[in-house]
Image 1: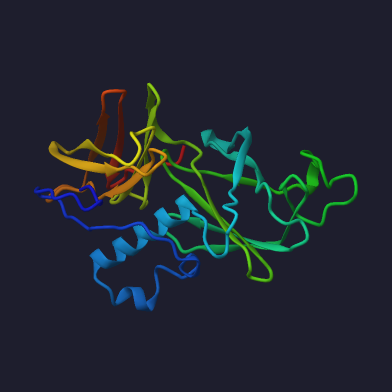
Image 2: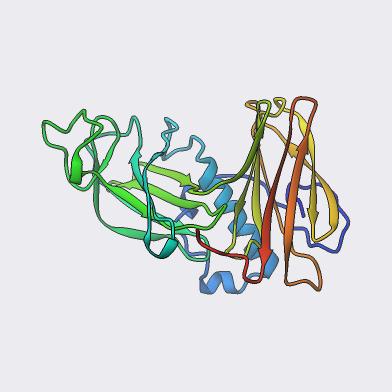
Length: 278
């Protein structure tokens, strides 16, 4: 069910979402005693809004310059046929004089701190200690740079946040090692898992007409619906969907976007036993 306020009728459940950003809620535990008192619908709505806010990372009081993460894949290998993806990480423009803490948020769990202090050099490269004179403006500092190695399922986002020790700066970022996406003629469509079994998903589009409402189609286990993206001034839009269908424990969701300029479609499995790391 499209979660952007579109009026839809089907055997699926609607949770209306709006995108807003509050720095202070990024690290609040989702699976808490307070959250347990909320309805299932309210908990899902809170989770989706927090995920969208984290991914969008707009300018705000703790990130007034709009700083953002850059992830560069440097390796993809793993044991027993699994893919372990390793990234070199930058936050260009971040102050080098500060000490930082790094937090990771995986779907299905609460955000958790990564042990150890984090530093950056003049390039914004994340490091495990203060850069020495020869490392201040280098893109390669050997074993002293921080590498992030992750396993993930198709369409699974891994979220990180970097916070300065003085609590003045907080930057959120997301990497999707194996994106579920399709591109065509200038537009891009992507679906991200919001829960381990894709009971909820995030759907984003780029390359849309600026400030326009653009329809898209969702087909889940044979149930067809229509939603509408509300693009911003850059032609970007994000919405959410709860793909499950009554009386079914699994299925697939196909999202199709067709405009005068492009045609794209993405499909994702949802429900029981759908989560599989690559």
